[in-house]
Image (cartoon, protein in one colour):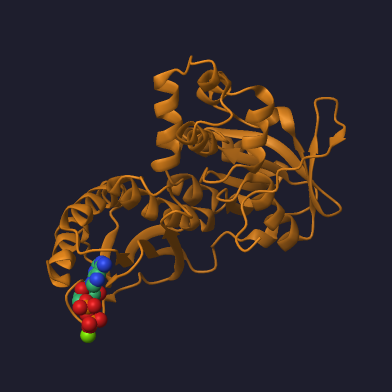
Length: 327
Ligand code: ADP
Ligand code: MG
C-alpha cells in the first residue's frame, strides 16, 4: 500500500465539497478563499497514542476526536469551521485503519461542512496532528482576556463525563464497577462522551456577541477557567453545587469522585464563559434556540485564581489541578 493510496482514501471520504476551496488535496498546497470582512481563526492539536488516547481506541473514534478537539478550540473563539489539514503518522500503511479513521472524521466534518484540504502522511509511532481553519467577522473573535469583575460564569452541557468514561475503561474509582452493578447504558454514555465529544460550535457563534471571555474545557474546569482568570486579571468564585453533572456520572460514581472529575477531569470540550449580567437574558434565549444547556456556576471577583465555594459559601481547598504536560 503506497502513501498516495492512503491519501486517496482520505480525499475520497473527507474532502467535503466547498465552493471556497479553489485547490484541495492533490497539488503542492491548498488554495482557499476567506470571505470578505472576515478573519481566519487557526488552531492545531496533536493526539499521541498512549498519551492523549488509550492505545486500544478505535480508529473511527480517533478520526472523530481529532477533529472534535480542534473544533472545540474554534468554538471557544466563536468561529465557524471551514477547512482542515491533517498530518498523520502511522506505524504501518494500513488502509483499514485509514478508512475507519476517515469514516469517524467525515461523520463529524459533515455536520459542520468542513473540508479536509491537505496534509502529510508519514510513518512512525501513531500520532495525529490536525490543523483547523475557521472564520469570524473581523474583530469579533472571543478572547480569554475580556472577563470583568462582576461578570457571571456559565458553562455549557455537563462536566466530568469524559473523565468518568476514562475511569470506566480503566476500571477504577466507580463504586458501581467495584460492586459489579455498572449500568451499561450509563457506561456507554460516559465512554461516548470521552471518544465522541460534541464541539459547541453553534453555542460559540451565538456567544460571540454576548460573552466577555470564553475557553473550552479540555484540561479540566479549574485549570481552564484559571487561564481566563490570568488573562483577564480577575479571580473567580465557583459554587461546587452549581456544577452541572449527568445522571450517568452521578449514578456510577460517589458524589465526591464526581465533584473531583467535574473540576479536574479533562476532555469535556464544553465551553466556559463569562458574561455581563445585562447580557444574560439574551444569552439564555439564544442558548435555548441552539438547544444548548447552560448552567450558571460562579462569578468574577477582584483578585486572582479560581476559588471553589462549598454549599455554605465557604472557600474550600481543592487538590484537582487538571491535566498538564511535562510535569
Ligand atoms: P508533497 O510531497 O508535495 O508534500 P504529498 O505527497 O505529501 O505532497 O501530498 C500530496 C497531496 O496530498 C497534497 O495535496 C497533500 O496536502 C495531500 N495529503 C498528504 N497527506 C495527507 C493527509 N494525511 N490528509 C490530507 N491530505 C494529505
Ligand atoms: Mg510537492
